Length: 180
Figure 1 (cartoon, rainbow, N blue to C red):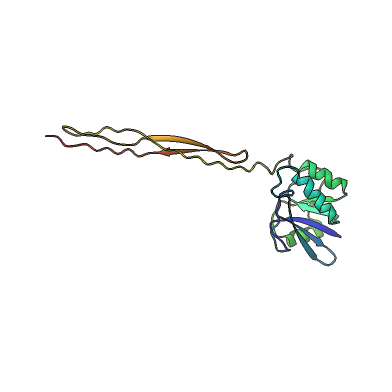
Figure 2: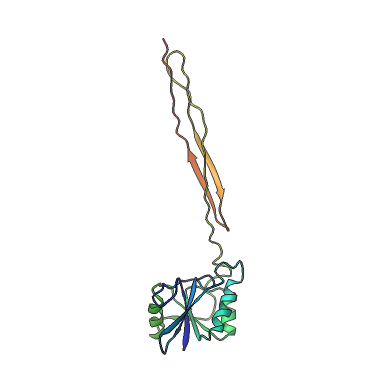
């Protein structure tokens, strides 16, 4: 029997990756010989349909079961049509650790998606910058001049759907001249 584990790298010692359609590797393990075949996931940067395309790639490998952390509805439907059982594992560990848990019957078989569609796409990050400007008044006897900077706020828009707002604060310095 051959099974597939979603992974962050190649090999049995690689960490399991909880994502299905956008994991870096699929590690296919033959349970009879414990030999493995690591397949780079060509769908990691795909803009849409990553889960379906990944499911089709897994089906080509002739696996009977998939072990992953999360799976969306379209990928689940594609795997079900290919008669591939899906097992969920959320605890991390290496591919080898997860395979051993599967062999001991410790993993949960799921019949439906564990996340909504497009769940792995909204990983935007925003960064904002602010710059302050202001004025100060000098204090002193006679003629004095003041200089300073005040508070400012800024905002930034991140990639994907993330957004960020930053705040900048300027320090006011004041200098006054001495009069007679």
